[in-house]
Length: 42
Image (cartoon, rainbow, N blue to C red; front, side):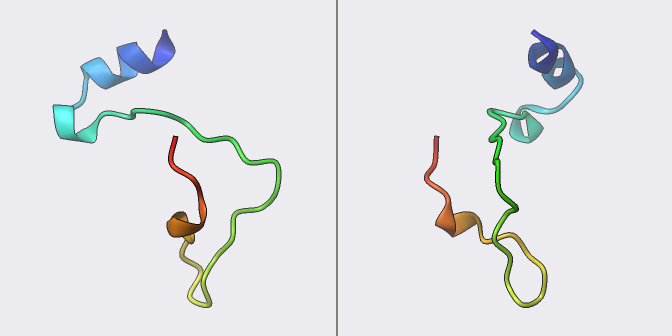
């Protein structure tokens, strides 16, 4: 898998665990940060 190859070059704390695809634009705060707490964790 492509993600496994990519993670080989990173430290364990920097690995990508999953990718979340969204069909709609991500909700953002007034300062432009993504509201991560509005998503259910996978």
